Length: 162
Image (tube, rainbow, N blue to C red; front, side):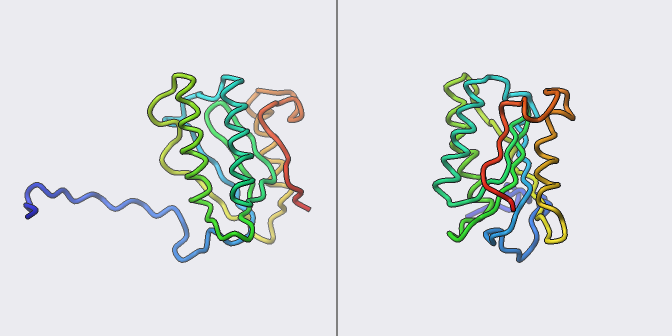
């Protein structure tokens, strides 16, 4: 029997996903996932390469399209789309975060690798997919990590957005 004095009422979390929206629908999404406490964790070349390999493996396993990705020192940007398998964005991101967290253990990074939540923006029909993709590609340039996006080694264009 649970005692009301020991039962704590938790505050309701702010809803960050659209109520009733099907996040498995095949449309493009801009996703940003930050490292835990926004720490600059992704500075080791070997770890970064494994994270990118994991992302590509999840793409293959899920059937998602990944148009563009960019791994920055404290976050990752993805422009992706579920395909016809009915896997939601949350499920894809959850699998990716879980697997990359385990990979980080081999580099002495224990505990949380990523923040609990992620930011998503549904790319609307009237928005240019190319503009959103270019925003992601230009991130290392805006942050002073490269002179031009082509010089940054932790990003890629995978699936065609045309």
